Image (cartoon, rainbow, N blue to C red; front, side, top):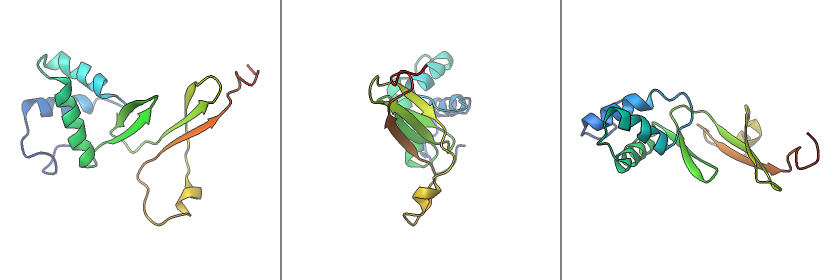
Length: 128
């Protein structure tokens, strides 16, 4: 969705990046977007991709999350939650549908969230 909120300067590369971005169904990294973009335009640099993503994030068009010490992006308001094993360090994505317990503790509106839950996985507990 390109509109006036984004930079007044709509370059050919920005238009191409937006088209490639729209092809992602879920979470993606700047590097993944860069790889797709390079197939369309070998001249597009990773710095251009990072500036493009920063602009979209600043205009609330995408969301960013931290996943395994790496920034991932999403065009949807999908939530990003993990279970992290304290023994082996394994990280698993989990689905948390409701955060009503959080909403009762403050005023405001939640648009998206990231939650990391830590514990011991079944494998480390000796269960298979």
